[in-house]
Length: 169
Figure 1 (cartoon, one colour):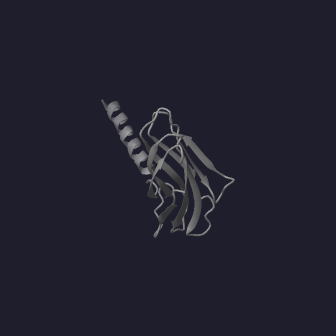
Figure 2 (cartoon, one colour; figure 1 turned 180 degrees about the vertical axis):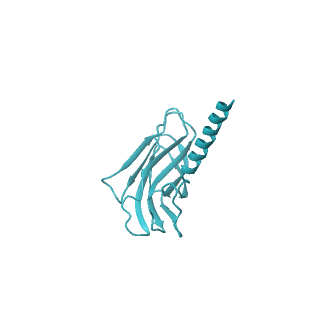
Figure 3 (tube, rainbow, N blue to C red; figure 1 turned 90 degrees about the vertical axis):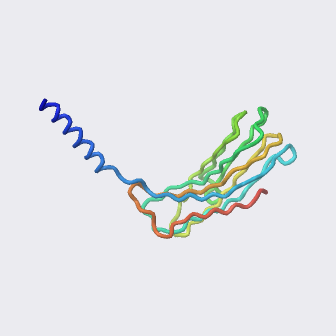
């Protein structure tokens, strides 16, 4: 009987120790702007210029991304829409492309952001390109920017993310 209590005591001590070593999650800020466009065989590609700004700081650690998330309708078995996002600020460093699988109605692309922020506000520019696949589709979605800090960090005062979308072009 005493052995059982010792085992239970060790389990409780282990559980309490693990709680004491867990770090609180970090902070994050996300902002998005909606997009809406119709594509067909004559207007099969659109582009959006995206300007993002991160304000606040100083930041201990900084991580983030810019994303384009789209929903298409109607779902066409023959349509293969593509969505791409590329950095105009760092053109040699990144591009992200995705094809909406046939029969699906949703897709996302992400690209790293805030790669070379030395002073704030930190501004970066991106281009989002949506290609319709040659059939009539409606595209609804958002262009989103996200910034965050590491575990246990508090969000610096005045931190905000701004997203400006120009288009479709």
